[in-house]
Image (cartoon, rainbow, N blue to C red; front, side):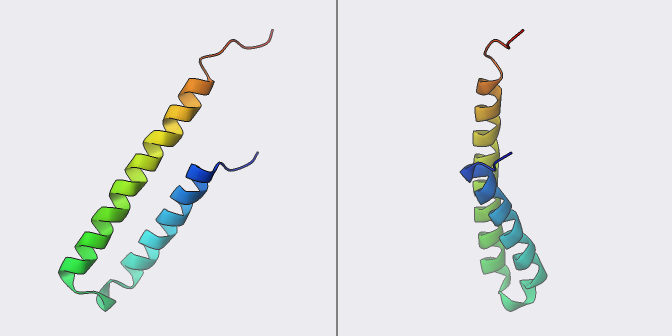
Length: 64
């Protein structure tokens, strides 16, 4: 099974968020919060995109 580009991007963003959380002491509080908010918004948008593609693919007829 191949990973679609939005799913791959979502995995990359999750990795970046994990590193950001790990290195939170390197950022001031406002910058950390802004970066985290930006990443989470992008992740939500990608999750909706991935869900939309999978649900639209499942609406077709299945072979008997």
